[in-house]
Image 1 (cartoon, rainbow, N blue to C red):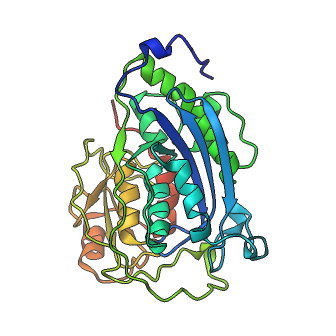
Image 2: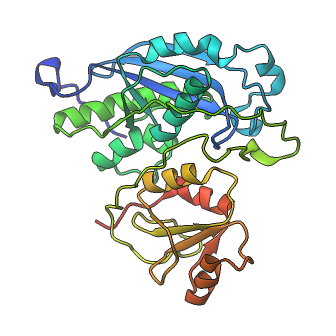
Length: 329
């Protein structure tokens, strides 16, 4: 447990740091592009990470709620909740002029941006800060990058995991000492630009996925979200092949083959944010191939088998993404 040192005062606070933060958590019907927000929470913090107020709302996703066993929000609970356009203005007021802070901020930002795009609007957010990236900048001795590990490091007690309000509270309480530690060492905050979505093609509402696990399928249509962007090079050296029953390690080269239930671009985004390299082809240097059809005769699966490259399915890979080991220092 780390004890907060408050010697860093306003007088010594880095001038380049933001003037306010919005710590956000959203629970969703799944991870794909057509999935929806079912609840959202925002803790507004001042420049030094002190809580100003908090806000929480349920959101009717106008579809099946997805993984109820994770977020606990059933169709009955959400039936009378407001639609996203009905809470969009209040949500925006909580975000306006602040840096969006979240644990795996890219995911939360993309889900929020898509909801505003559907509502033919844009969230007033210009920058985001991922607490996973900040923990790495601070070299915190965490066993993994889960929120519960960050919370435990700072002595913050979780009460209801995957409840948006409690997750946002926990993150706000863990972010303040992280922010103070960064300020004391004058660490540059890992701020990233948030670009609102400007192109949206409405698609038919997905049918309820009765009996479909987690609601993680996608009705994404090519061209609905674009343009694709060039990814920056992976900053870590390739540590070699993935070994069964061991975690992935930053720098590993991961290739994908065939259809995925989570939209491919989102899955690749999560891969890059974890510090892994997305490989466009399979070679002897490839650490892992992810495919839901290992018996197919695609060039990638054929090469992977000839090279002895490990192969896992998407479900196993998404579990591995939760605990990626840091690169060798």
